[in-house]
Length: 245
Image 1: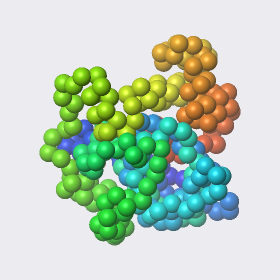
Image 2: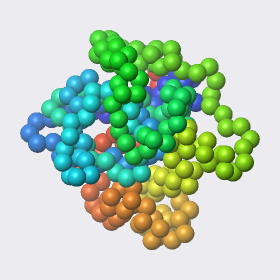
Image 3: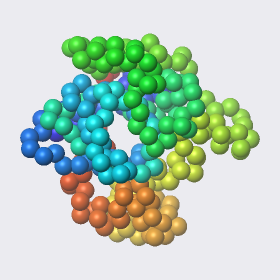
Image 4: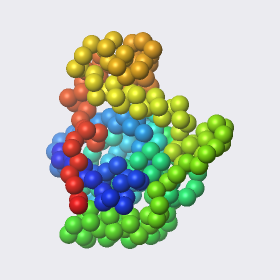
């Protein structure tokens, strides 16, 4: 499985964390891979066979070819199909809203068909990516044509207005976003020092609060994550992004 990340151009960096690609030729039965909350929304284009996603019922369901992944606050299990070929856009926490211009709160915890959000023009995007010799350059051109001229800003607001605006533009509350970001910090440190030290370094009140967040966001306690992490490498491998400049 070949996963890579790439930095966007300077104009899009206020909105987009990275582009990513994933290619795989799966032989035999593909095991489930777990994706954790990371505070970002994503656009995902399956140019090969779409992945399967485990629903709350436990049943597996094939994803759409083009997806808008909202903010999640629980892990998601995915399984690559025989010929995976994926191009994705990972937004900054508040970076997706300027491209959609509607409240993102309703997308929380969900992965929707992008065609249901943007309409039939999504098929043209996917066709263009599939035909392009340089897919990332084509993707960036499409995004630049839709991008706002200025970076998103939060004007001076009272606390209640700020929380409402934050939820509309980021998709989760400020408190939940802070927990997800703290969990991501702990995830990167886990295994390098004792868990009590990880909890203290990441700002947890104690180790039990760290364990609580692992259970919610990873679906397992830290001890199980440390035993299984070599089996769950997938999108969020914290690789150094390659520049497109």
